[in-house]
Image 1 (tube, helix red, strand yellow):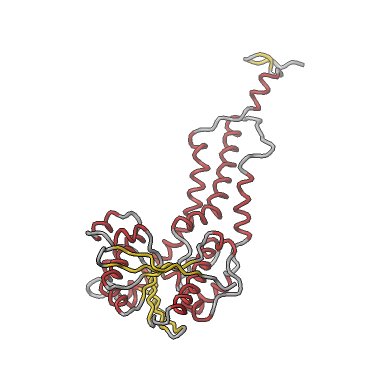
Image 2 (cartoon, rainbow, N blue to C red):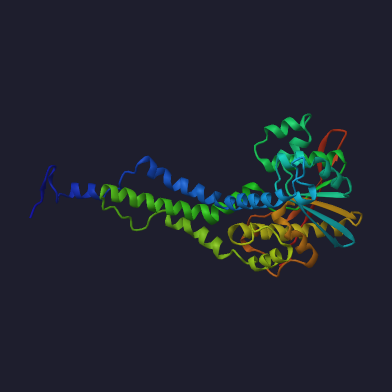
Length: 340
């Protein structure tokens, strides 16, 4: 029996093919997967923000009459003796321009007492700030707050004639890649599924692909999650012992932070072993990385995170400032082999 409609025979192959064609999506439905991926990638930042708010509230109890939190309450200061050297860890709660300006004097005093300074970050942007004729202006025009802070700290190191060492195995871009792999891809795929479902429901279309192209994208995310959490228990134990901030102890954020702290501790150990003249090392980094001190003192956990290794470099870099030409020179590239 033939079905008749406004456009003719509803059983015609041509019309049935049109019914099975891919539904057209609205601009919102097309943007949804991308927006979901971006939201997923940025999700861990909410934990950092909440932690900063929490620590800021805790520190506010110590605000002086001048409205400034004393330096000893604005940082998490830990000292460790290893290999005949004293290592002072300064865990900064807010590594931004305001912190730099507020505690410049105290940071410079800490750097002055050091034989060498280990910074969480020192890259092209920080080097550009510290070698500029006008560092204040360069800091002002720099986009990221963390680069403003460490750029300013590198200026202090140059002024005091101290070498800078970097043992941090990751950078901002690798961190974003990690978050994109673990959260951005799954969120993006979920957004794609919802987008297709919405378009299909809206148009009452019968289009149902046998193998949607976006499903295979879940493979790296599934692999990534399968390799996470290998040191979460060790980190949780350290957090309890050291009363560390909550952020970064488990899940996708703890994955990279755990690996960073282990490699960082091993890098500092290698630095001290190869330079016995360094009797006082000052480490300036985010407060969430204070587990580095414990790893350095008692050794790393038995297992290092597997996925973190894929994104890391395994060498430490030492820079020396040449005041004659006002440039930093890479003077040493030493291997780091984390305990496993």
